[in-house]
Image 1 (cartoon, rainbow, N blue to C red):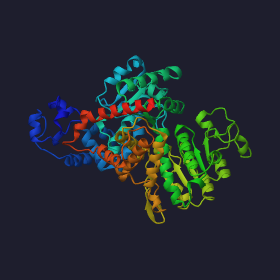
Image 2: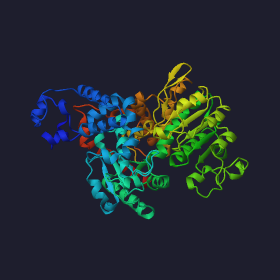
Image 3: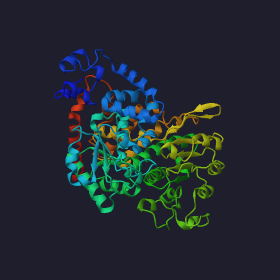
Image 4: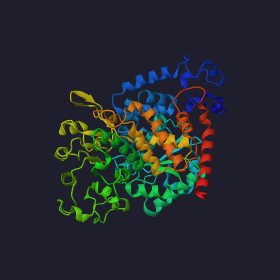
Amino acid sequence: MSETAVDAMRGVALLENPVTNQGTAFDLGERRRLGLDGLLPPVVETLEQQADRAYAIFRTYREDAGRHVYLRGVQDTNETLFYKLVVDHVEEMLPVVYTPTVGWATQHFSNIYRRNRGLFLSYPYKERLRELLANRPHPEVDVMVVTDGERVLGLGDQGAGGLAISIGKLSLYSAIGGVHPARTLPVVLDVGTDNDERLEDPAYIGWRHGRVDDDEYDDFVERFVEAVEAELPGVLVQWEDFATRHARPILERYRDRLLTFNDDIQGTAGVVAGALAGAVDASGSTMRDQRVVFLGAGSAAVGVAACLRAQLLAAGLDADEARERILLVDRRGLLTDDRTDLDGAQRGLAQPAEEVSGWRSEAGRGPGLAEVVEQFQPTILIGLSSAAGAFTEPIVRQMAAKVDRPIILPLSNPTSRSEADPADLVRWTDGRVLTATGSPFPPVEVGGRQVPIAQANNVYIFPAIGLGVIASRASRVTDRMILAAAGALGERSPARRSATEPPLPPVSELRTTARSVAVAVARAAVEEGVAPRVDDDELVERVARSQWAPAYGPGDEARGGTHSAARRRARRRHATTTRDT
């Protein structure tokens, strides 16, 4: 362990800090030097031995909720041990640390809250946000995940409980992307909640007040951004689980002021585009031949649709042809240009009403999903609606009757909100479907063999964006960087090698996939001029060097933050030069 990391820490204080604590792995010399004799049992263990013991306890919990709470306890006690467990058992622990179990954690956050992690920036303290940000547990931060908890997964408004989402996301930044946990900061903008169940819960620990909105809300977000610019210039800010009416406006307002992106809009777009690249290859077709229908027209669906439209344009279609190939359906039916309830981004994806005037509509709404599938004959069906079971057997069979290899992606989270069970999709298409889901599902039997279900989870994209940004010292996150991430993910698709393989790499390969995607992100940042120019070999080396792995001993000097500070200085200099030119 680096002496620098513990210069001002000894004894109980050292053991109570989850970043510096090694528990029984402190050797005898360290125990004597650091005042730990008597505070620990006499045995000296390796990290591997500690992990084996912790994993055995993990397996005693029968329910994922209990496993989640247990892992949170390990994380709050010894971060290195926590990440060792997650990295070594990523397939088993990913659904526990993140979707679908994190949805339960947001709903029960007040009950499972035990120890401070991250920041609650509550509306009553709006005049003191910089002061609150200065109270962060670690001075140097590379990545911050920020939510207001209004649209958590498919569960709606969870108020301050949304902090569980920020914590879960950043756990994957570290476990998959290799961002050091001491350089991450989860944040909830606690502007109240309109969830009566939370407000009436005597255990609720958030600001017990209805949500502020409109000018008050915008002013609060602006104050937060100003505090970030003053306290942590150059930090990567990921916006997470904001309602549609806020998500895109916030992204557009601040994307040229901050190093920032919205994972629901851009991360989802990247992972879906990457999954489709492999699925389209496996179908024996090309991207320019696809006809796509979305169920859902929120910020995530609009972001994915915009990304796919860019892919269609790159494949040689003109703007009108690309528009005609992508249809969106929400609870009021097909998006058409005569609707008055669409925002600007949705209107840009709406179809001319006269072109679908002959399609069957229901009273008070436009054509629904079943009618759109029948008339449009899509090759790709994507669910981002939180409407559980919306991909019904008649709809799926109707689609499969016209397409040799239908591509169907029920992507809503958590599992309980998925538009379809992949086992049903396999049965209804006689095994011809190409599918990926938003949450984990068990393998299904196809042609007498068990086939894994790919999880089109944003974990394939956002940790790699963080790693690529850190390695390249980028000052901005651009659309081109997101497209580069999608392209790199698509290149690793097993479906490119065999039409019977899933469209995304296995979860067990997440860390190696993250390195490939991060290199593509870093390369795009340099090419677009938002990162200092450096040759490709150096970029590859930087990515590998920047991916932290959980281990005790020398090499944790990164906790001191000197590399972080240097990166932020480089980003500030580059951002200033870019603006001046």
